[in-house]
Image 1 (cartoon, rainbow, N blue to C red):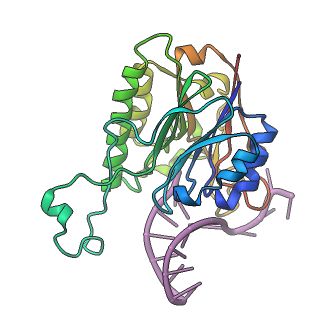
Image 2 (cartoon, rainbow, N blue to C red):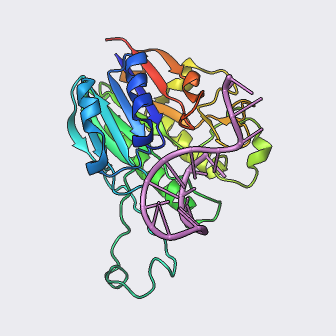
Length: 279
DNA sequence: ATGCCGAGTCACACTCGA
């Protein structure tokens, strides 16, 4: 069984590359992030013709996460329990006291998490908030989002037989050797101690980051910026990961990072991470 | 060549990403 995660950075712009990834890796399940479309814009037919069912949540042009599967797709959840929301608190988005403000309504939950049971594994496709800058409200949102995910994920992992895979773009650089030059990230998001702790805490919640276990090589990246020849110069980041329960981790026979997918015209800035499991 | 930022929205300049 093969399961992959990929931040596709607009599915409609990269539907051909996506179908090619499914075929090239003979994938059973693909977790996608940043589909950047609403549900009604999702290219369902292309997936169906390739033999995949799809679950998707997308509210607008931002975010959007999906799971495609050819081994079943059950019990779809379009958010995790208690998933925090986010709303900009600026004058232009909220020029006058709105009904929301007056009612103190919780901020909207974004399309950043979707779960489904595929071939006996509870798969989550996750797009962790970026954080934007240290001290930005989005940074606190990111930390709260990760903490709440960890709290609920810990409960999912209590039964030692439970098979759970938390796949996605975590927007955290866990190690100094996961970036071309950590000095370039001084004072920025992705490397701060609080973000790294929020990421590492999934180990205490009963999970193993299996891509590290199988591909420990330093300076192995999953993302390269579009600007300033980052890919040809190999100035990348490792930010796409797979935390799994022990029952999944022991089935992992290999992990592949599809660096080839970053080449050529029309590439996403992220590449797929593929898990090979015993059947 | 792995090649100098891209996508979506919207109306041309902006947001967002990391």
